[in-house]
Image (cartoon, rainbow, N blue to C red; front, side):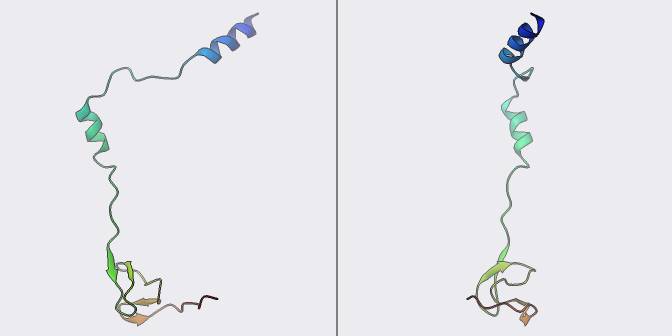
Length: 75
């Protein structure tokens, strides 16, 4: 009898809820740091494609005008 009652109570119970409503200002202050930052893209000196600043160009394999990575040709 006890196990049946426990099963019924567990199936109908609800999860945790906030004790108080958060004000709009508190919610906004928490979300102030959630914004995503944009990647800083620059134009490659060799091929003219965009790539992330201070990183090797994925299109031609160059960094600051010098080829540092050999790029395999697509088949």
